[in-house]
Image (cartoon, rainbow, N blue to C red):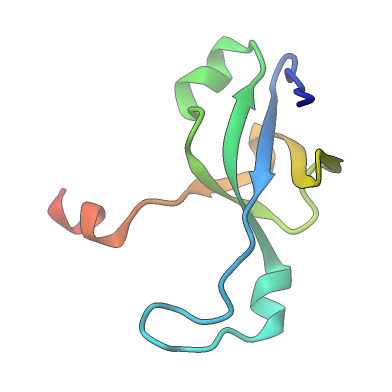
Length: 98
C-alpha cells in the first residue's frame, strides 16, 4: 500500500462519497453534491498551527475547488490546505448535548 505524508500546512483527505438521500428520506439534488467536498483526514503536515485545528480522523467539509486530487490503490484522495476546509462535520446529536 502506498502512503503520502503531507508537508508543512498540507492535509491529506480521503474523499467520502455523499449520500443521495438524507436519513430523513430527503433526496439531495445533484448541484448540492457538486457544491462541496466531504472527506476524512488521514494525514497532516508538520505545521504546529495546523495540528491545533484539525486532527486525523476528522470528517471535513471543503470548498468544491479545493486542493489537488489524486488516486492511490483505487481510493480517491485530495491534498488541501487549512484554508480550503470550511468546517469539521459533527454529529447533530453530539452538538445538541453541548
